[in-house]
Image (cartoon, rainbow, N blue to C red):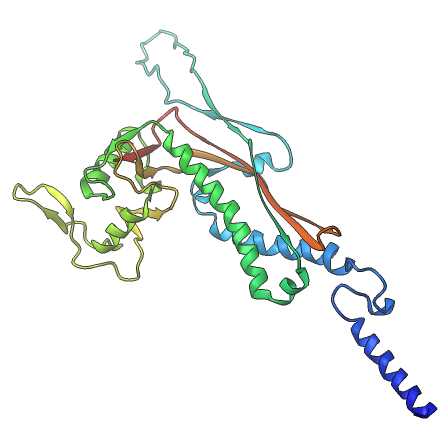
Length: 325
């Protein structure tokens, strides 16, 4: 082998080394001997990527919190308690007599306290972060799973808050919401001056699917009731299942299903709720915060997502009905 052939081989090897320097986690300029943590990728890019993706999924999947009164703006950044005053219906209405002075009466103000006392997190460790970055679909799946877990936990806690509300109504048939059941709940809310056009229904999936099969369609004439021999309401009959696979509204009230609402035949279990937005106060002090760091010990990237929030029921007046088995 002559000198010129050896020189050519050396040049080829140097070219290969230059290419290998582009491998993720190494700097080309350092020829593979520099910053093995890949600072540009791990310390700067990943936190931003994770935060953006999970926050979008969190907002899309957070269903119940958006339905109730949101006090998040009051607790952003500082403070752990929001005092929510409730002005009672004024009393002391009296006739004015000629020549007599008016009488002044005090009102007993009541309040609810929204305490920001829940701090939830999801933590993962990824040994091959470069592979996850390269595979966008895989990355999105991890991000969605973490964001969904936090969003679902907030919704679950809201359902738990509703379960302790205190105003209950027994359902006629377990896991079935009839017209008569809805009418009774509406009567209770109306008796407490709750505007029904602002209310909504949260139910378990069996009740929701039962409403689907009965063909509860927005805009269908409400005269289509199923009755017994005594002309009493026994159910709904809208001549077929709902097209589109959704239950838009019942008597103008939107219907939502949630897995946190029990499917049960045990006495006293909540199977649905008829609610006004003022029934629950929700405060999200810190939206999903994502932090990550590279672990030399594990040759992996550790990622933690967390959220800080609280919720409380407004129990001073009737704003929600627990539909129980």
